[in-house]
Image (cartoon, rainbow, N blue to C red):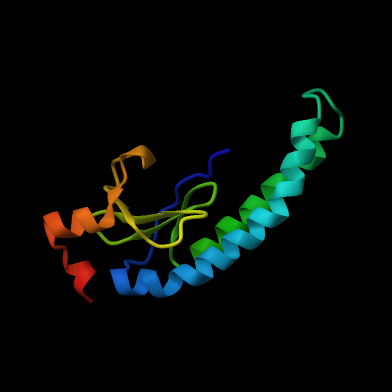
Length: 131
């Protein structure tokens, strides 16, 4: 399941994103726990089970609520349980259950192209890292 990328209205600096991360982690964990039993039910069902559509709708509702909460904070839901903070030249990228904000990727790159935040900052010394 992939969540659509939505444009982010807010630009963050590293300090702002780090301050917001604990709330993002809490919201994500709550929704991940809510979604787990729904995923389990779906995994146990045959693809032609007539109950599948209603359970898939329930799944989508949980994901939509999570995405909405993340976007209200000014961040972006890039994929299921992946949250990114726009810093202008790219995004600070976090994926549940990572413990901290430790990756960066260019906006044009895919998730697999994330680089260690420490390495990016050392190589490029961006302004958003010094606020």
